[in-house]
Amino acid sequence: MMNKTIAVLFAAAVTSATCLAQGSQTVAEDFKPSTLNQPGQEYPQVNSQGYARFRIKAPQADSVKVSLGLGGRGGTKLVKGTDGFWTGTTDGPLDEGFHYYHLTVDGGTFNDPGTLNYYGSVRWESGIEIPAHDQDFYALKDVPHGHVQQILFPSKSTQTSRRAFVYTPPGYEKETSKKYPVLYLQHGWGEDETAWTNQGRANLIMDNLIAEGKIKPFIIVMTYGMTNEVKWGRIKEFKIEPFQTVLVDELIPYVDANFRTLADRSNRAMAGLSMGGMETRTITLNKPEVFGAYALLSGGVYTPDDLNGKSKAKLIFLSCGSKENPDRVNKAAADLKAAGYNVVSYVSDKTAHEFQTWRRSLRELAPLLFK
Image (cartoon, rainbow, N blue to C red):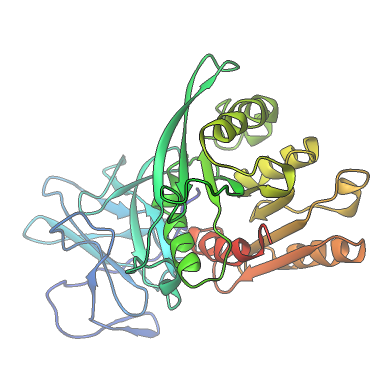
């Protein structure tokens, strides 16, 4: 997904115990390593206000910049110390939740060696987690956990085996007579089938909701949506037909044959974030007989005219961040309700086109499915 960019430069002495003033805000010196750091790595760090601090060893470099920053004005420029380390702190706090980022060292693009990598922006990017006030719903807890397994399913249309990840809820292996509904959940542009569990924590969100008795357990299937590759800025060239064939004619029959599913429309839903929402919208309109519930997460809207004359969905869910276009989402929901559709809209507070919006959206969507 597109990086949440920043701007304005500031260099901070990492060892200083004093508070540093950046702009009009005093920055609290309570920085701690990001929870996404590689084992034993101290940087990047985040503080209680949501600022991020970076420290990179590059003694021969002439410039080092981090893509994260405020306002899209070029990221955060680091300052070189006499020890060969480059250090800097974002000019302001970042939105809560997960962010992709990378380093630019003398014009070249590199990952931060201190943190784990996540597939986004059509490459493995560095990741940082800004602690959220509501992070408990996707936290790793002492509750029964489901399993996430990789499957390779045959695809005659693409003449290869394709990969998907399948979340099965706690108890799936033991309750061998029980069958489950299925949500087909799509990633965004530049991501892949690892995104919803690695960045989105979808499995932990499900585990926690199930443990709290808030949802009916169901299976989630996540696969790669880019059957024909398109480059940034040329998204209009994407053709849905190849992916629709893979999903509807190949993946769904494979899942129904190899997992204990309730293999009918009322027990099958499709959802997606961003471009995955665009895929969801198009496929559900093309194949309304396949899915009984639809969810677009920062991925467009439906209108009554779109749905007129088609098999009626049991649920339509529309969401986005408050920094996106909430008025459009809320208006679309109101129009659909007025036309007699069961629609729910959700706006994530103080987030934009980013995974905290979509984590929260999944939390809101899951209890509404398969009632």
